[in-house]
Image 1 (cartoon, one colour):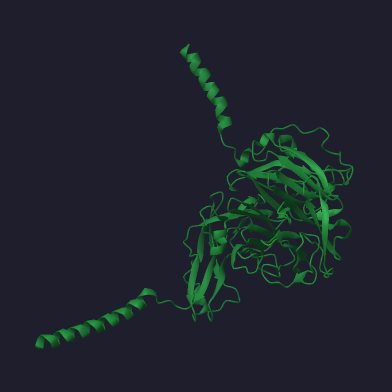
Image 2 (cartoon, rainbow, N blue to C red; image 1 turned 60 degrees about the vertical axis):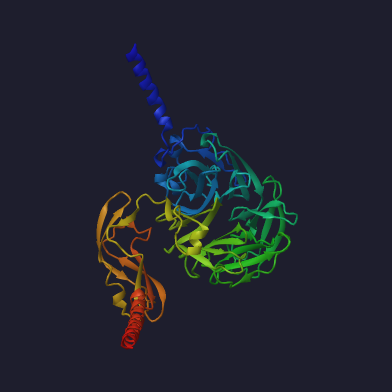
Amino acid sequence: MKKIKYWILCLLMLAVIPCAMPRTSAQAKMVAPLPDNYKGTGESSNSPAVVLRADEKLLETPIDEAEEVAGETYSPSDRKYAGMPSIARTGNRLWATWRSGYTWEGKYNYFPIVYSEDDGETWVDPYFIVDHPDAKGSGIGVGTPELWTDPDGNLWLFYTTGGVWAIKFTGADGDVSKITWATSHIIYEHLIAKKPTVIKNAEGQEEWMVICYSTSNAGLGLTSTAAFVSTDKGESWTERGRAFTDATNLRKYAEANVYQTSDGTLYQVCRLDGGGGGLERSASYDYGKTWSSFERYLGEPFSGPASKPHYLSLGDGKLLAINHASETSRTALTAYLSEDDGKTWQYKLLLDDREDVSYPDVAYERGKIYIVYDRDRAGAQEIRLARITVEDIKAGKLVSDSSALRLRLWQNSELKDIVSVQEELPEVLSVALGAKREAALKSLPTTLHVTDEDGTVYTLTGSWYLPVSFSTEKAASYTAQFRTSALPESLQDAYGKLVVTVLTKKEDKGCSGALTGLSAIAGILLLGAALLWKKRSKI
């Protein structure tokens, strides 16, 4: 009898243990039945997208029957494109999404929605798929995903196809298996490119605002943007006012972002494309009814290389801007901070200095700033995450224990990242003013042993290179890069392990020089004291 009880107890333990084990990214597939008619039910772009729970059957289902995308499924292993990401936080859970499907943005795109419960270190991918049913083989995509958490803690997904649609997820901070959702067509014949902003009106009441532009005049020649407002928590949206630009020859994708300063002023920042690109800004002093003429050439952080930035009020006069510190290319993605409502931007932190990084989106919660962005959408297909704080931006480097840069949210599975270098490389290499160029790099090793994320070790022999602009004639900061022909095509330095900051500055003699001076003074004093003592002893 005792043996029978023992074996029953063992069986019960085996049944309970799997349920108690934490979910990992490898356990991403959720078992949930798919609706039998989920494909082919969308008659036009005016039909809503569908939300699908990821399970074995879904991930093996072709996304379309069109020849252009033959063989692609909703499975992560089949993704050929990744761009335009968005991020939100509900409770202790992060949510992210982006455009995927096919090889570029277009009618065959869909959104994988993923989540993380360890602050972005690992992700369950996917948990939801959002796609538009293939309308009689024509292929209708979904565009511009924007995840957002409203003041009540509900998760929203805003997207465009035949206007602006919204999917409201209820319970996104609780048991993921019990999340429910509802879809609504909120704004007709318009497009958005940014999530809503919570503003306060003249009476101090909260409203939700998005900046839209019309689908009828999208492209070069776009003359205006429209501020839409919801006063009933997203149930309905009405146009409040328009901002008109005189740079129609430069306006192709407005991609407007709106923020509010402490005195109630609203600012919208719009992207410019033709003729050099950049950004332009308009102000409203009556909560969006009327807007000033757009201003241009405002300098950092209101310049750019024809791309979408992100601006956000953090409260107490603090403003956050995520934009490129470049006017010519999508590089040097940087976080900027103002503590005086944007009058000055005193602080900045470089997030990613690589080429082809773009489209940042931000979630701000409990003092943490989560920034998601893409890189090389059809190649490396990177979706990266920066997790930082205000203190990091003010210091110009990571000083918070929880902070991290370039966390991989998604990437082409064929690529591997270098995660460590066996040789000890200095974070900052100081070079005295007037020194020769070669002296700056002579202390750096020319053979490195690097390790990828799978633990594979590579031996790389190469050279260190400084930019052409490098000079020791004045104090400045430069980036030295290690270049080698031995780097496999599948290996990349996403985390900047093969770069060193070179700082040219006046040679600091430090304490030794000061001590020398003090020693001389002390010697003179001692000598004087000795002579005085000798004189007194004779008396």
